[in-house]
Length: 221
Image (cartoon, rainbow, N blue to C red; front, side, top):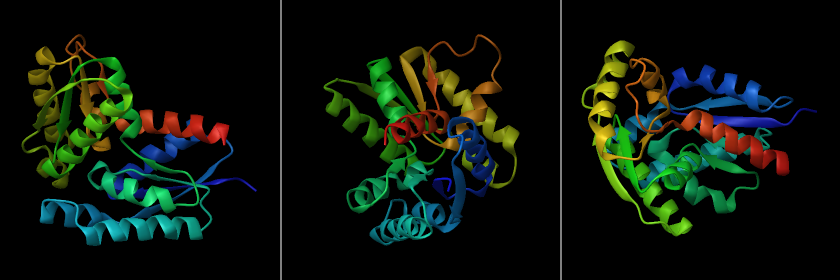
């Protein structure tokens, strides 16, 4: 019987992105999805990740395990701290979407830029980079920014406006950093829309890096 990978999403539009990555990186595995938009909406409304939302994230992870998941990936950076809290008690490998990306950023340079479209995502991603740097014994300088209007544009279905806002913020940040972290999986496409030669430092996105690490760790399990 094929092993099962569960994705816990807060953005329905990311389902096909991760399904494609799983087919590419994890041949022989099957996937299923748990989608709960309210996890992100409540976090945005509260301005922070609340204990109630953290408990609900843990509940979704356990539901995935009960449904037969052999591994779980939570694909929303805004609720990343809930993954950290749940992991010690989870009986299967549990992955946070942005951890591999943070580690790669720390290994790439000392001046790290963090871009997000939501302040509720910016803070946990920045905190994660700082903690992973400390774990690696590295000193880093963080420059961060919120791409104003990008999230609202995406909510309206205006993907081009979203990508333009992300691209503009990225270009402003490039001269001052060695590497840039895009805090949300939904931001990844914006880099591709920039003219050739615009991006002068590595720009890291979470979907590919997360699935690369997940595949490597599961292959050793």
